Amino acid sequence: TVEIDRGRAWSEHRGVVLWGRAERLAVDSSGAKRAMSAWFEKYRADLGGASFAAYADQVTQPLLFRIVPDRVAGWPDGPRPGT
Image (tube, rainbow, N blue to C red):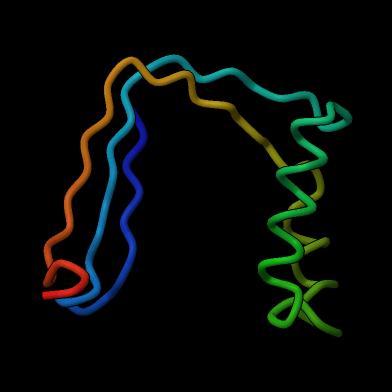
């Protein structure tokens, strides 16, 4: 089971829970490369200069998983978009 939360304030809070099987991705697989490229693109501004060096020192071998969900549940605790 994996739970992912987003937001800090109640009006921003969203989440999802996935139940299923996790498959570890080989670091050199095409799926892992796509995931890491997307992650670095998303956080590029945050990982400039010394921040990237700190990340590289702390995460020498990232672990990546693909979740094959059997069941999914989500919740928006804040106001619904458009309301």
